[in-house]
Image (cartoon, rainbow, N blue to C red; front, side):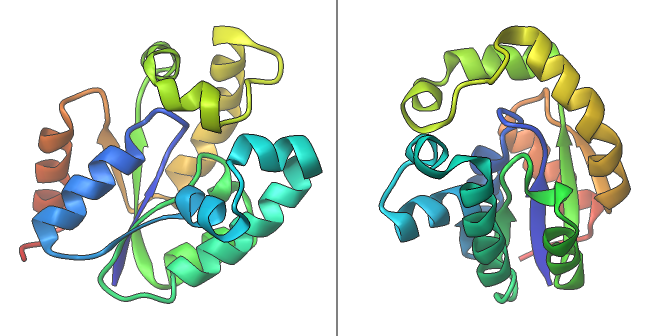
Length: 171
């Protein structure tokens, strides 16, 4: 079984995933990092060169590859779970954990992350309202996919302990 972390950009999937993997003694796979490594480009560059469709093709391959593992923590990109194929792959081989945060908190985290502007595509319509709109559309899908929903507006170490405790995982 794998643990698959989902949620909007800025929800802490990479940070929590790294801590969770360390806590459990499992490897960590971040599909966005896998895409960048495989393509030799940042996600921002992939979007600029081939658009979202090119990125989503690479993402499906990364999700498929990451989900082949066993006892791994897998961090999916914010939109990955919107694909039926990705959802099937993730749920077939793992428990899905939704890291939930408010649009305001997500917006603040995105703004404060220097990697966002360098490596991620810009928000298309810009600003806080885009985060609100996309989160409103994605939240029902995240909730439906999740085996566990965790409040991600806390310290990452606390989130890890909640996941381990609620899912009965001990290394």
